[in-house]
Structures are given as C-alpha cells and as structure tokens.
Amino acid sequence: MEITYAANKQKAAKKSKLFRKDGMKLLLMALPFVAIAFAFSYVPLFGWIYAFFDYRPGIPLSKSEFIGLENFTAMLSDPRMGPVLINTLALSLLSIATAPIPMLFAIMVSEVKNEWFKRIVQTTSTLPHYISWIIVYSLAFSMFSTEGAVNGILFKLGLSDTPVNVLGNYERVWTVQTLLLLWKGVGWSAIIYLAAIVSIDSEQYDAARVDGAGRLRTIWHITLPSIMPTFIVLLLLSISNLLSAGFEQYLVFSNVMVADRIEVLDLYVYRLGLVTGDYSYSTAVGIFKSVISIILLFSVNFMSKKIRGQGIV
Amino acid sequence: MSMQANAPAVRRKRPIHLKDLTFDTINYLVLALLVIVTIYPFYYIFIYSISDSIEAQKGVYLWPAGFSLEAYRTTIGLPGIADSAIVSLSRTVLGTIVTVFCCSFFAYLITKDEMPFRKYIYRFVLVTMYFNAGFIPWYLTMKAYGLQNNFLLYIIPSALSAFNVILIKTFIEQLPASLEESAKIDGAGYFKIYTSVIFPLSMPIIATIAVFAAVGQWNTWFDNFFLVENPKLQTLQLVLYNFLNQSSNLSNMTTEQLNRGDLVRTLTPQSIRMTITMLVTLPIVLVYPLLQRYFVKGIMLGAVKG
Image (cartoon, rainbow over all chains, first blue to last red; front, top):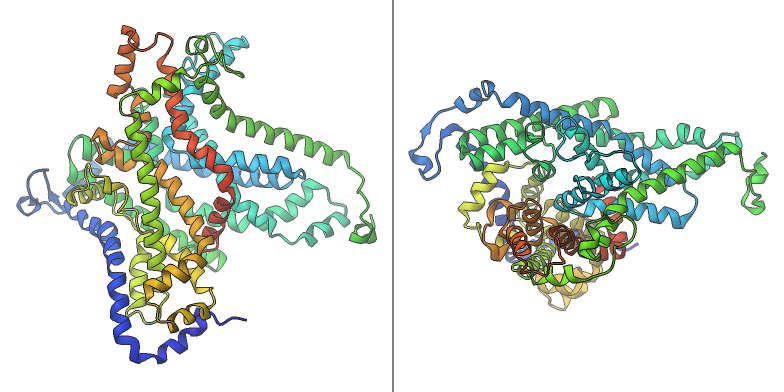
C-alpha cells in the first residue's frame, strides 16, 4: 500500500515551521480562483436588492425609491402569473411523469445479448444529449414543418393530405415539448441505471434461473428492485427543480402560435426584464422561484432522510 | 434444470423458451425503432445538404436527390459564417484550456494541508453549486463587469466549476504522496510540482473534464443570445438560430439574393439551413464516437461524487 495524501495529513501538521511562508504562498495562489467564484456566483446575489427598490435602468440604485415587498405583493394580482405557473408546473410534471422511461429503456438495453447491437443502441441514444437545443430545433423543424419530412412521408403513404404543423400546434404543445425532451434525454438518463444494473450480483440471476424464473420474472424480482433506490433519488431531485422548467428549450421552441402555453417562469422573467425593462419586478419573480426551489429541495431532502435514512444533497 | 448444469465447467446451452424468444424479438424491434427515431433526423439533414437543391424540394427521404456540394460552397462563403466558425472554435479551445487549468490547479492547491483556511476556501467554492442568483441579476452583473459584447464573456464566467473541482480533488487525493515528496526534495515549488507531477498523473480525470468542457463551450449560445450583439462575436449556434427564425440579415439577404438571382439559381433557403445545421452538428457527431468512453466515465464520476 502506498501512503496517500490522507495518511500524510498528520505529517504535514508537524511542519509548522514552513507553515507561515508556504501558507502565504498558497493563499496568494488560491486568491484569483476565490475571486472568480466570488465575482460570478456571489456578487450576482447582491442583485436581489433590485427587487426591493423601484429601479429603472439609467437611474442609479442609490437614487431609486425603496418599496419593500411591493413587488412581491404585486405578483398576487398579476394576471399573467397564473397561466405562467400552470405552464411551468404542467411541463415539469409531464417530464417527471416520463421519469420511468429511461429506467425501462436501460432494462431493455441490459437484456440485449448481442454486444454489437448493444453498443449501437447506447451510442445513438446518448448522442442527442450532446447537441444544443438550437440544433434540436433545427432537426425538429426539418421533420415537422409543413414541408418537412414527416408530412412528406404521411402524404406519400396516403395517410394525410393536409400538412400538420406540429411545432405551431397550440393544443398539443405540452405533449410535443415533453416528447422532444424525452428524445434528447432518454439515453443519457439511462446510463446511470445501466451502471446500477451492471453492478447487480449475477449470482442472484443464476439462482432465479435455477428456480425456473423466466426473463420477465427476473426483471420484475431482481433488476427492478435493485435500481429502485437510484430511481427514487433522481425523482426526488427532479421534484426540487419543479419551477425550473428548461429555459433554453422553451425559449427556442416558442413562437407566436404557442407562446401562451409555453411561457414558463424563466421565460416570463426574461420577457419582463429584458423586453419590457421591468428589472425590479422580474428580479422579484426570480427570487420567488429560487425561494420555492430551496424550500422544495430541503423538504425533499427531509423526506428522503425519513424514508431512506439518508439525504440526497 | 439442475445446479450442475449451470456450473461453468459444463456450460450447456439452456433450452430456449418460447417466452424468452418472444421477449427478445420484441425487445430488439423496439430498440431498433428507437435507434431509427434518434438517427433519422441527423441522417435527413445530411442527405438534404448534399442533395441537388432543386431536386430536393420534391422530397428527400432515404437517399440524396441528385448530388451537389453547391450548398456547402455557398454557405461557407456567406458573410459572417467563417467569422462565426472562428469565434465558436476559439471559445471552445480557449474556454476548455482555461477551465481545465483553473479547476485542476485550484483543486491541487486545495489538497495541500499547509493551506490556511483550507476548509473554508473549499466550502466557499463548493457552495456555488447549490445556488444561482437568477437570470436578471446574472444579466446585470455581466453588464456591470463590461462583459457585454466582449469575447471574455465566453471564457471567464465558466472558468471555475465547483463540480469539476470536487472530481479532480478526489482524484489527486488518491495519488501516492511519495511522487510529490521526491519532487519537493529536488526543490520544486508548488507550480512546478503541479505542472510536472500532478497534471500528467491526473490525465484520466482531466481528459474527461476537458471533453465535457469543450462540448459545453461549443453548444453554449445563451451568453451570446443575451449579451452579445456584435456580429463579429457571433457564435455558429446563434447564426443558425437567427437563420431559422429568419430574423437575421443573413437569411433575409439570402432570400433576397435568391429572388434576384444573385446566388446561383439552384439553391433554396432550405438547403442553406440544412447545411448550416450540418456545420454546427458535424464537430459533435465526429468526435462523439471517439470520446464515448470519457462521456460514460463522466457520468459515473458524477454519480459517485458523494
């Protein structure tokens, strides 16, 4: 066994002579990085102060009027807040409802005996995770626009004679977006389950086979229970992100036809702040979102401790 | 079946149950269908982009309609495309180098016991993973730093990621301490030890992080969208987005020129759209199979970070 860093700790503690000189050196070296963390993660937090002032671009904050919680009470009477919250919750809940699909997909992949086919499935299914939402938009546009591939194929097969506009469909926008999210993420989300399946003790399967269990029964009695803890943790984590429905996705896929049903909280904050220039109110809406997220995270963590005996954060 | 039949010494083929056969057939079919659904859009864009533009309008499904590289020739020559490609490439290369250096050097420093307030400094950076000030404060802060319309916006804010620091720190702590000791005895300073001992030894984890950082940089368009209007600093992602929304001078110009017949009459906006998409997607699709193992390793590390 090599002596590792951890074991070296006691030794280092004795070297108090070098401590001062080396300590200063180290501190100076670490300083720029601490400064970066401070500048880009902590400083923006001070921006929360805008929510409590009547801030207008161009007028410095020191000259702005302090209005306390007025922006937060204004949210209650904001007619747009209701629909936006409904959109956010609907899209989030739909994506949570599809959470078992990557798990199912992982089980299916793990049951493939042919190594070559297995690799093909894994490689292709993970690819969409590594492309930006803009590319997904371009691909979806090529597939689903009125002169896209899908309409062409349907027309050719004589299944439809009027082109369907999928991306501009007001009624189906939630379903379409959920399917797109699934298309992009299913392979990536499945990796973690596949890893869990690989680490299951193969003796269990042998024993089950000896007892005469078929494939479906081994999946039901061995595979599923083994990956359930992973599933639960991921599910709990996704609940804490309830109000953070994918900003980039909806920004890209928003258009005149579906704008009303695709505007989620993040998009609303952006529109209020940058399009109408109401920084104070949009910051307040952002704070509301952050606070709810933190509350959700802690409650989910608390629940997880109660149920599983360990937290998730 | 008896126990002995399953012993490795006498591996006898198990009789194939009809049930299992059905299961396998359905399983393979569904997975094959999923592969097609995933790959077809990429394939479609590809065959459309190398098709003859006029022929393609009649419909492209399985094979290119005719063959022409005219769309590529024209697209690469369009104003702004070459500039954007250079911006995208530079942000990817520089951003990756900066992120890898900052995260790994800081992670090394934080493993040193002689570091005063080590725990506090580490926590200070760690905590940044768990909170996010929100969109408007981010926007106003970046503006206040003068990063609007500034290439550094693509590089500096993403330089230090707490998650990467955790991964590298954990890796460095598992390295044998003796290697560093000997370098120390030779009189090497911290930076020298980092460049000659720690960095080379941490290659497995650093390669993984570099790959993720590079893909992230190539795909990021958020910062460009909100804070950079200067066409000289436009990334390829945004050029594509504007072209899709026909909100850019480029797409209007292209359409106009097509109507006037300046561009070769044999090119449609669709062809150009497909070609730009190909240009943005190609780097990812090309490096992706080569780097697959790093990606898998990356998510595994993420899973066991606790």
